[in-house]
Length: 159
Image 1 (cartoon, rainbow, N blue to C red):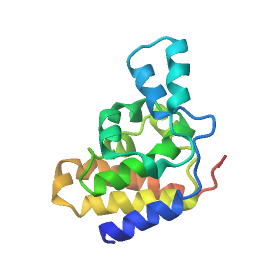
Image 2 (image 1 turned 45 degrees about the vertical axis):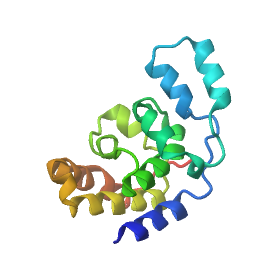
Image 3 (image 1 turned 60 degrees about the vertical axis):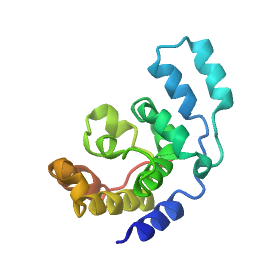
Image 4 (image 1 turned 30 degrees about the vertical axis):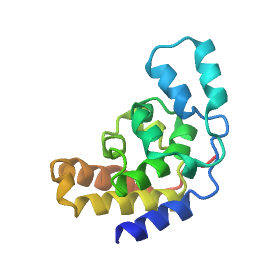
């Protein structure tokens, strides 16, 4: 698939996703900075909750570490923005968070739908064909073989 086709598959698969009760971008930054629960609540108030496509590259890049602190709903809401902006070369890629899959990392991906999983697989397959990701190819292939592709064949819970 081309970058444009992958971007379109991401947009389509994640088009109606809202943050809901998930951890937001700035809330995750407060968690990363060991801020108090009060500060985390205040940051949540300014978090985007409805339109993941509205994030600017500058905001995503500044908050890239948030990927480590999202819960499942937060990851589902923010992941498409990170993937699309990375495909456009505007932010660092989220490959680490899609390939280094311990129990905690997998829990953050648990609410993805079949279409969302397939869109992520398309992105990772594109990364496998791209020399810029050569160092990550073994991890990408392992994640595809052991986690992503088997999920397309098994029932899983979607909120």
